[in-house]
Length: 259
Image (tube, rainbow, N blue to C red; front, side, top):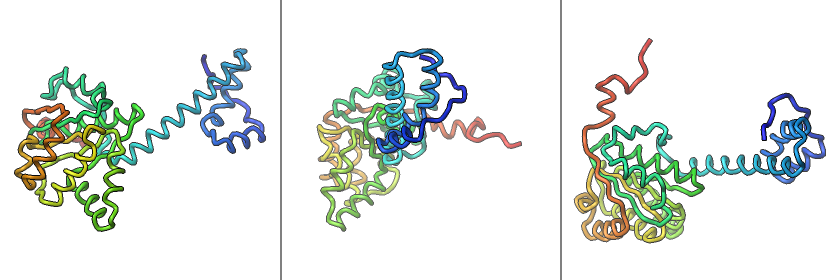
């Protein structure tokens, strides 16, 4: 059905009050135009009800997605809309397969390793946005922020609750492993989350190191145990080439022209 965008009379006060009490803000906002259009086009009453309820559902779903994006702490707002598939060294079939999100539904993991600037974080953030758009939850960390969060929980005595909260998400992302020095605390934080998510939730990691080399930046025993769980049900993707950021800078496409 087509909804006209002509000016429509407001709803009666008693109906507006009832919709406020029922907490239906999106239906309430759409109702004047829908009712005016329904009268002009002689809609069936059931169609009016369907359209109004669809508007409420649409509005609630979008509000939920906004809240989940904010709670996830995604870094830069990069989605597949700005992803340059042809510039990536990730095979197109792999990109397409991962973008279906079927692996998230199966609780499988993703490890993307390669040089800085080869699109690892952009691709995983695009995946994270798609996960949220599909009605699921995401928790996003760098290894540094994850270590800080687990460290605070250790001090507060809330470590079990904190790990449970993190792994309540359908996808837990740990970005840029290996970019900064790590140690015992980072290794323990990484292990706790990977172990809690094992065969229950999906974990995606990006790193300039292959996961088999994580024992060079954190204690070997912890790294071995964490990587064993991480890779057991994982898609491992290796990126190659020069930095896309450096290429943009060299071509002058990294900034808007001045003047």
